[in-house]
Length: 135
Image 1: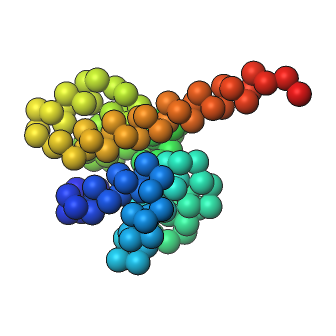
Image 2: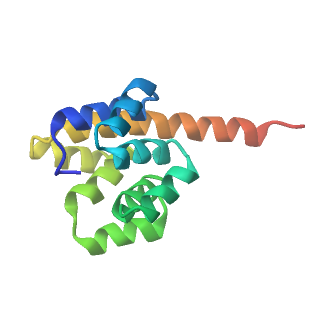
């Protein structure tokens, strides 16, 4: 993630929020991997598979780590990529990870993590709602 310009990451954040215009912009301007990651974070299995099949397994693992999948988290730890590990943690609401970004003045990751965390919490509530529904 650190190789992207801040403007690209801001567009990615808007795509994560569900803004189709920013999603399309990422696709048309050479960032299909970020468009796919935004959809993978939103629960799109096809997008996750696209990342795996098109040379972006690290981003697929990041998405899975954000979903608290133990193997993905362990992979990030083993990779020694502190930014991706802390980003996955922050996206799940880990305050120590947020402090880690604050200390390094990496505010774009704080912005993105807050948006992703909001989405993940909403998804969890929706899943709980449907799980509790009696048909």
